[in-house]
Each structure stands twice: as C-alpha cells, then as structure tokens.
Image (tube, rainbow, N blue to C red):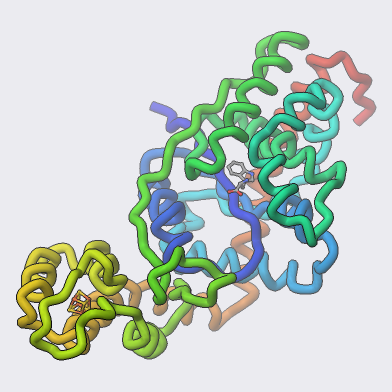
Length: 330
Ligand code: TRP
Ligand code: SF4
C-alpha cells in the first residue's frame, strides 16, 4: 500500500528548544515511519515577518536542518528541503493569488492578531497578507493529504482546504483537501515557570550539551514556599515537577509524594531530573556532534531532499498549467 503524504514546515528563525520539540518535532519523528513525509524549512515564510533583517537567514536554515536531524528526523525516511529552492512553490503561490479572494486573507484570525502584536515590525505588507496562501501552495504543490500542525495553524489549514476546493471547482479536480493532524503535545514550562520562549531567555535548546542541561536545571524555579528540605512542597507549581512528568515516567508519582511529604530536597530532585533529561537528550547531542564534523554533508542532505521535492513540484505545476490552459513552451 502506498503511504499517505504528509507535509509540514517550520520557519528558520533561530535555534529550536524543547517547547518546539515536544510541540511538533517529536510528532514528526514518529510520523516518518508510517507516512511519506515532506518537511520544509520555510524561509520565504520567515521573510514575511523578518524581511528587514536577513543577515542570519542562511545560517538559520542550516541550523534548522541540524536541529531536525539531531532530534531524529531521518533524511533516509523523510524528505527534508528548503522552500525557496523549490521555485515551483512560488509559481503556484502566484497562480493561487489570482483566485484567492482578498476577504479570505483579511479575515484570517492570525493575520489580524499578528498585525496587532508585531506593530514595531511593520508587517502590513502584501507578502504577509499572503502568508496563508503561501502555506497553501506549500501543501498543494506536494498534494499532501495530511498536515501535522499545532492548534494555532488551524485557520491556515482551513484556508488551504478552501483554496484547494476553489481551484478544483474552477479548473477541475486536481488537489486533495488537506486534513490537519493535531500534534500531540507535551507541555513544558520554561526554566522560570513562564511559557518556554526565546524572548524570555528561559529555554533549554535541543542543541544544549549535557553540561549545559545540568547547569540550567539547577537554575529552575521551584516551589518558592519551600525553604528547608523538610518543608512540604507543592509540585504542581514547580517547573521541575512539570519536567519530571515528561522525562521521568517511572518515578513521577514518587517525586510528587516525596515533594509533598518533604522527604526529598529540591537539589536532589533536580539532580534526578537532569540525569533523566541527559539520558533522553544525549543521543540527540551525539547525532549533532557527528553531523557537525562534516558540514558539507548537511548541505548534501538538503540538496538531495530539495531535488526530491522539486521533482514532485514540477509534475504538479505542469498539471496546473494544463488545467488552467496556459501555454507551456518548455
Ligand atoms: N505557518 C507554519 C507555522 O508557523 C509553518 C508552515 C509553512 C507550514 N508552510 C507550511 C506548516 C505548510 C504546515 C504546512 O508553524
Ligand atoms: Fe519541585 Fe522537586 Fe523541589 Fe518539589 S522537591 S519543589 S518537585 S524541585
């Protein structure tokens, strides 16, 4: 049986942290065994909000590939590619922009929210309005049936379905209607108990070495009411406990009970957590070290993936030209 096709992407805006890993990447790693997966480093999407400062773009693309592969994406199983290297996506984007009503884009909730939130960036641009249209082109160029995403992306998926339907209605059945597949997420707070986010500087990166992980765990905020080791604690307000729930499956209950009873000190509790995190993350770190030994290999992986993505994109775009009765001279 042929595997169903999956497509998803991430904007290369800097290193990935454990929130990104447990929010998305971990799912991708699992899916790559059962689906024909296409994972795109969507640098054009990064430009929609980051067009003013592009100095780190190249480096961010390479680093994203390294983060993905060290986290477990396997280039033998999944197609890993760079969006801007598959020019056919931009052709489809342009053609779709002819048929997408402005009102669909203007009423997209993420558009309105971001305009409000990123006021200082001046994203009242043509490109940013078309963000979901570009995303639809990403998905449609590969005729992807399933799109693993977080909840925040559901409006974009709804639009991708509407755009696919509209194309099919006007020019004949061409695209499947892509279905969103909600990521199963494990929630991790940041080191300080707030949401894990680069802008709060409270992250653990998937690139952090075992030593750095251990140091960062030491700085995690615990139950502030606990002063002596024997004070009963409240694990539910402690980030260390939230992390134990993800990394220490077998002993979570024990940690909870010992904390509440005041029979474990925070220092020891953190040490146990750091040990478990390091056990989980060491294979990632080792893959990274190996990858970085030969940077040309990373570029080769991206070239191979991009060639595979492009081959399919070419087929789709020529079918689109044909359906739209455009003159193809090549
Ligand atoms: N907009 C997505 C995000 O920010 C990234 C993305 C771009 C994407 N193209 C895609 C996701 C295609 C899924 C499918 O998370
Ligand atoms: Fe948090 Fe563990 Fe200290 Fe309890 S014992 S407050 S769970 S670090």
